[in-house]
Image 1 (cartoon, rainbow, N blue to C red):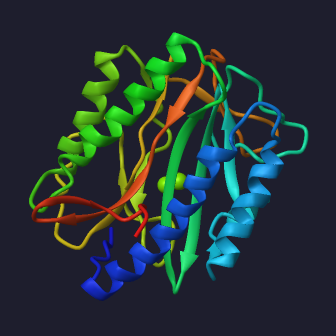
Image 2: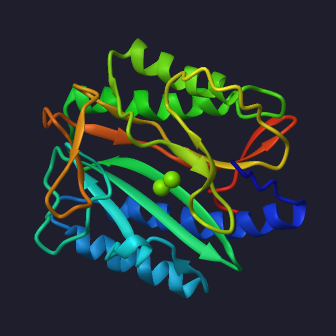
Amino acid sequence: MSIHRKSKYEVNLMKQAGNVVALVHAAMKDAVKEGITTKELDELAYKIIKSNKADPTFLGYNGFPATICTSVNEQVVHGIPSKDVILKNGDIISIDVGATLKGFVGDSAWTYPVGEISDDKKMLLKATEEALFNGLKFMRTNEKIDNAAGAIEDTAKKYNLGIVRQYGGHGVGRVMHEDPFMFNYRVNSSLILQRGMTIAVEPMLNLGTDEVEVLTDEWTVVTKDKKASGHFEHTVHVTDDGAEILTKLL
Ligand code: MG
Ligand code: MG
């Protein structure tokens, strides 16, 4: 495993990339409405990224055909935007955004409600966001990464939610996926977080089973029981004082 710790200069560039990602999310929050297609959301994201002199990190990544991942309801991650997917009242949509600017990547996901959603889905969104921020409390120098993972696991258990196990957080920097991989549950990892590490923390929690499968489009990950899934992600910088969120507005 080779972990690239970033200099102040590099972290500053990552903040600029993260700012573009945050601009996209701010637009998505407003644009997500009954009747819009996921293709329209994708086109809006592309325009914002390009107009900020950045590049969409996901487009072409392992052949992914779009700027953002749009995963609706039981879709967990990697949903492909489409003109045929029209958002309906009561849906939830996880939008994952990656932008590359000046050679560095920002990566952040958020799950948005469409109109009025069920109490179960409200709980799912609240709990998954809470899991992210509970994990971030442990993203500081000299802390075990396993403690951050454990905080996510404990939050999922508190709300009786399934934890997606095949996917997780990751180092991020000059490329989207760097070491280390970060589980969303305890694995007894001995890895100690160090100053300058930049990691995307991203719990994916389900209303039902932990189990997921990939659709025949070879991208879209769905829950096996077709119950809804939430996904919240920030790219953070590990410091002595805790997690500094990089995917936020400057
Ligand atoms: Mg992401
Ligand atoms: Mg990620």
